[in-house]
Structure formats: C-alpha cells, structure tokens
Length: 463
Image (tube, rainbow, N blue to C red):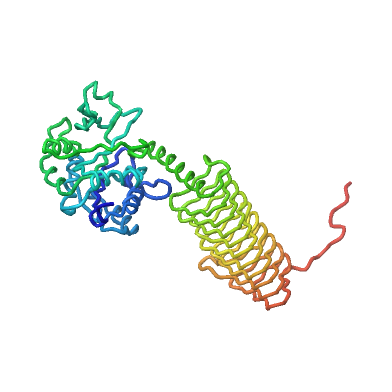
C-alpha cells in the first residue's frame, strides 16, 4: 500500500429516501444479518483502514447519527447534509468540504452491504499504485435493467456510462454496468465536480459524468471489474433485502465451516454477522444464532435452538429447542431440551438444566441441577444443589421482586414453592410438596404441607 491510512478517505452516499421500503425507518438502518446495512459499510471502511469518512445524509437523519455514535467507528467520521436530492453528483459535492486535498477517495453507498473489502481495496490500488485519476467498479449482470451501462472504445478503455433512462436500444443490450463504486485522486475530484451539469432527462447531476470530464481533461480513467457481481447489488426494497440477507448468510456459513464448524444442513442454520464460533462446534438444522453470541470449542447445538447474546462454554450440549437470551452457560453443561434461560442468567460448569425449565436472572453454580418442569427466577443456586421437578421460586409479590438463595448441596423436593425472600441453607432438604416461607438452616429438613387425611369408605358403593 503506497499511501498511509491517513491519506485514505471515503464518502458514503446515504441520503436516499428509500420509499420502496414503505417503512418509517430509514432504509440504511434496516438490518441485514443482525446489524443495520450502514454498519456493514462502516465495517468495510474499518477493514480498509481509512483515515476519514464522510456520510452524506438527508436532513432528517438523527437516527442515523445515533446509530453511528453507538458504533463508534475507529476513524474520523463527518456528516454532510444533502438538503435537496439532486443526484449522486450533487451528493458527492456535498461531501467535498469535508475531504482532504490530497490522497485517495473512495465513493460507495449505504445500501450496498455485500461489497467486500477486497474489491474496494482494488479500487484504492488502481488510484494509489496504478496511477488512475478515477477508477470505477463495473460488473457483468444477467439482467442489467436499471443500471448505467459501460461504454468502451475499441481498445477496451472506458469511454463513459449511459443511464437506463438515457440509453438507446443498442446500449440497453450491454451487460456490463456501472456499479456506482469509485476511487478518485482527491486532487482531481474537487475541480471535476465543479464542471458537472444537469443536462439530462432527469435534470440531475450524475456522478457518472465525471468520467467524461476527466477524460476530456487528459486524466487517466480505469475500469475495475468485480469478480462477483452480487457484491455490487443495492437494496432498494424488502425483496432485495431478503435476497441480500440470503447471500450474506451463505457467506457467513461458508466462512465458519472453513474455520472448523460443522453444520448438518447449512441452508437451515442462521448466524448473525457478529456471532463468534470456535472450531469443532456442531450446529443442527434450525439453529438461530443472533447478536453477540459466542460459542466455545466442542459445543453441540441441536435442532431449533435459538441463542441471542449468549455465551456458551467448551464441551456444552444445548439440546433441542433451547432458548438462551442475554445469558451464559459454563463448560461441559447440559441444557434442554426446551429450556429457557434469560435476563442475565449465569449457569456454571457442568450444570444440568433440563426440559421445560425456565431460568431468569439467576446464578447456578457448578454442578447444580434442575432437571425438569421448574421456574427459577431471581435466584442464587449453590454448587451441587438439586432442584426437584415442579419447583417454583415465587419471586414477585405484585409490586416488587425478591431473591431466593439456595445453598450448596441443598435438595429441593418436587412440587415445592419457595416464597422469596427466602434462604435455604447449605445441605438443607425441603420435602416434596412444601411451600417454604421462612429460611431453612443449613443441614435441616423443612416440611411445609398439610397433614394427609384418609377417610375410608368415602366413595359410595354402586347400586
């Protein structure tokens, strides 16, 4: 790389209204694989180590500003407001005051999340290493409708582009299109933009006209063809969003399988962009991994598990239908089938959380067990404690929530209700069917149920 990152700038055009989305949300903030499209673009710039980026937005872009601030990009980011939508050339001109006078400038779009850093790097290299004053990215499409077509001279040099609405019948048959991505020398970009006019069918300032302006001024223009045309696809409605989502999810799955993750049916595994997986993880069909989920080595996630912001330790088994949200599970644990962990639950090493157990905002220390049909809310469960089937921590009195503390090696009999706030001491026993409202000392047995009464001959004899 001939230029340091401080000499690299980027302009992200993101002022489009996105009316075809029919949404109150700005188009570039619609999510793709768990994160807004715009943040996928900023990720590319992060990988390219740009020094500054200018985001061209419409006037009503406060939500965009908040999203970017939360992302905290590792480069200088400026906002340029395009108050009138007068075309891509006008949008780029809006960003010019924020750009340095030297170095290279990349132009890309907030609604093209599939573009790869490798392809964008080729545009930078065409400017920085091959001496191009402008480099444009082209692609070959089976159906080029709606895209500007690339015009070349007999030697194959790019002569210019023609927009769909301005093209004649012969030009519309051209399959090589202008993707809209560009690289420029900053020193030639600013004067060239000042020569743009809007003498066209739409009355707009076309960014594509810069090619003619630069060529007529004796500048060097180079076309870089994308190796995979799908990278250049824009997202303008929800059908295209779904298509892009499918392409990106396949990319994500392929990447993780190359890293040593087994997927029994990759077409039925959904993994968000921010998820991290270790080698020898096995994912069954129907698994959904979202948010900041992190899964360690040798974890097995069986069918229809759904994890959101979950941390899972090495060697753990998540059985069928388990849901984990904003919670963690230690090493060599077993959870499920059909268990639900949520609300910051922390389950330690070798815990056993079985079928139809819900755990909310609780801590289970190592080797604790709750095998089936149980609700544990706002609880602290000591190591090696055993929670019997049908146990409920009654943590809510209608106004406030209280904690239940169960000591290590305690045994809670089946069908018990523990009315918080209450503490069960270490090694204590609670008899099955008890309703516990007072603390149980360590090593004690608590029985809190009605005495059994048997009345003989209660059922009348048949006539």
